[in-house]
Length: 146
Image (spheres, helix red, strand yellow):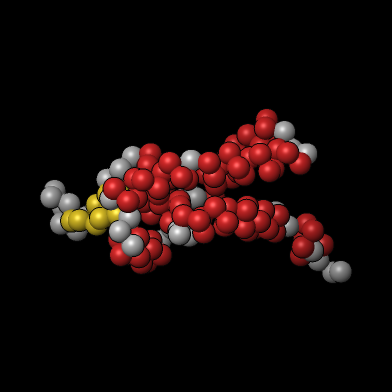
C-alpha cells in the first residue's frame, strides 16, 4: 500500500468509533425496556444530575448541534418525559425540565451503568484500566472540542 497512514489498522478513529457503537449496542436492551433512545438517555442523565437546563446548555454538554437536540427534546416532550418552556429572563432561551414521568425513569435507569461495567470488567479489563481509558478519552474530547 502506498500510504501506510491510510490503513484502517493505523487509525485512531476506527477503534473509538467501533467501541462507541458496541457500547451503545450493550445499552440498547436496557433502553428498550425504558422506551428511550441512547441520545434521550444522555439528556436524561444531564437532567437527573441538574434539572431545568437550557437547550444551549444541553447541546454544549452533549457536544451536539441545536438542530440535532431540538427534535430530540420535542419527541421527549411528546412522550411526556420533559417540559419545554421559554425562560422568564430571556424569551429566546428554552428551559428543559423533567416531568414526574421523566423523574420516575431515573430509578429504573440506575442499574444501566453498573450492568455495562460488570460485562466489560467481567471479561478481562479491570476497573482501573476502564477509569484510565475514560480519563484518556475525556482528554481527547477536550483537545478536539476546542
